[in-house]
Image (cartoon, rainbow, N blue to C red; front, side, top):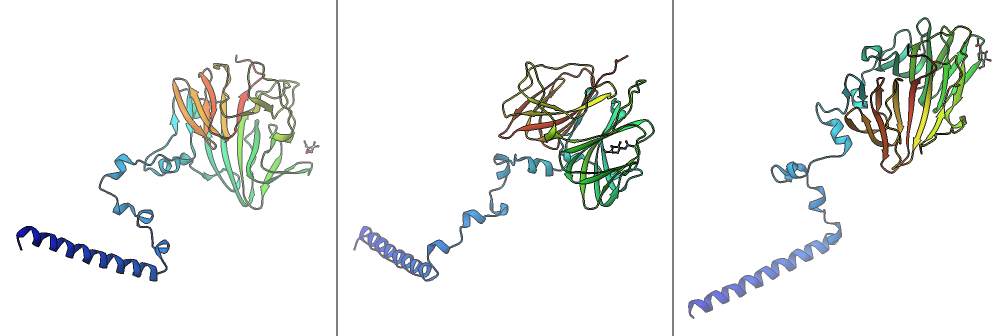
Length: 310
Ligand SMILES: *[C@@H]1O[C@H](CO)[C@@H](O)[C@H](O)[C@H]1NC(C)=O
């Protein structure tokens, strides 16, 4: 035999051995309930099995990942606007309320003439009174509460219901399970001979109003008459719809995005926003919204009205 023949013979022997080993593996696999039941190594691979530095080329971009990123927040606070996103909320007991935690979102420290806060009512909770001469508007975003006034009249307010309580108006909001309210309060700009009254309602009972030159749907939750120095608008946009007017005006706004997502322009900044986000808009900040994503955008908007800016 020459060297060549030795080598070929060796190869043939190796191939045969390999075949025998492979066949016995197949037999083993079949005996063990067949190939399909074998665990998929690829699917269950833990991060520790991935190559070093694999996250550099496979970043996690889903919003939940970003929210959990240490030190990351979408919240922004500037001279003429603020975006307050859920990961920034800080709750503490609301003064004079029982079993209720509050997170103030907009306050006069920012330059507003009103406050906007979330009130998280827990089991057997009760509201405290508003300050002297301060009017209050509440809107239920989760759970339900009962509203009782001095005449003993009781209303049950479910999600999407609201109440306006005039200044110095005796009332109590009570909850026996759990409820989340968004609350607006301001010192009433009293006009002589114009007295506001308690109002109770729900968004779906309010008629759609004309919006000349615009495509969004508009409802107003309070009467447009003189005794009311602010109103609460509910505005609906289908995905792709946007504000036509690039508004710049003297009024101030507190906004809660109730549904959907989109881009809010505030001054020279463009913010991706989603349901749960709160926005403060100071007078004259340029503002514009476009609804994106695949579902309706709906937001609730405080706006001061009926008062001369002087
Ligand atoms: C209490 O509420 C009822 C029903 O909403 C209303 O008719 C009544 O005037 C209210 N009481 C006061 C003192 O405003």
